[in-house]
Length: 218
Image (cartoon, rainbow, N blue to C red):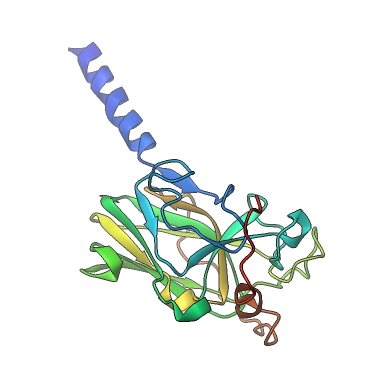
C-alpha cells in the first residue's frame, strides 16, 4: 500500500509539473504576429492562442528593430500593439490552466494585466497584476543599446481555472518575456511601486511597432 501511495504522489506531482508552460517567444520573426505559434504552429504546442494584436519583436542588437535591452531570454519579446487599428489583446487557453501566472515585463507607463475564467476576457475576474513604470530604471546598464532595459518579474496565484489573459491596458507601452502559465514563480505578486516618465513620442513601443513589419528575422 505504501508503494502505491508513493507512486500516486509521483504521478500527481509529475502531472502538475508538466502543466507548467513558459513561453520565451524565441523563434518568432521580428514584427510578426504570434498567433498560433504556441497552438500547433512552429513553436511548442501548448494550446495557447494569441490575439491579433500580439507580435514578437527582436532586439536591435540581434538584427531586429526593437529598442530593448537586458531581456530575460534573448532576443525576442512579446508586445501588444494597435498597429493597423487592430485591438485583440488576449491570450486564450481553451483547455484552461490553474494555480498561477507570472512573467517579466518592461513598462514605460504604469499598466495592468488581468486574468479571467472565460475566453477573450469574459467570465469572472480571477486576478489582476499592476505593473509599475520602470523601463529605464537602471540607465540601460549591461546593454546600452535599448531604451526598454529594466525588467521586473511579477506573478500571482489564483483559485479556479483560467482561460484567458487580457493585456488591453498594456497595449503599446509594455514588453513581456518568459510568460508562464500554471505557476507563480516568485514569492510576491506585486513589486515595490515606482513611477518613471514615459518615453518621448516616437521612441516608445508605439513608434517601433508602427513601423513596417519585417519578415524572415529569426
